[in-house]
View (cartoon, rainbow, N blue to C red):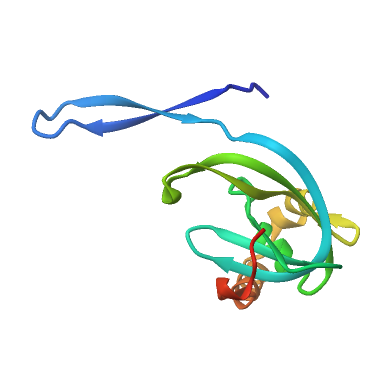
Length: 156
């Protein structure tokens, strides 16, 4: 995989009034990983605002929440299969762009998670890809039922 310090995205926009097309370059600075950590804790549920957070109760201390990685489709479904179970969460402290916060922010974001003998990555590449529509609908409903008021959690 090729790594770039700046990723350029091109958007096609119609120039108003002239009827001509033009390309606009939108530059987005890559996320910068500051550190990596892991915790073990019980999965408590989700909180959804502008972004989705997953919350966990470590063996000691207060509940902690992490941003869900946008590049991890169906991680919410994987976690919904493990309510109130002990899971291992690997997370990264990253500097990233959060437009709703006005620019770059430092956040804690899940990079990997596993429950029992199956990791999210393995599940996603196997069973997760082949979920029958009925099972997907059941897990989506379960994930919604695990979504709580954000004020009931404490984000680290």
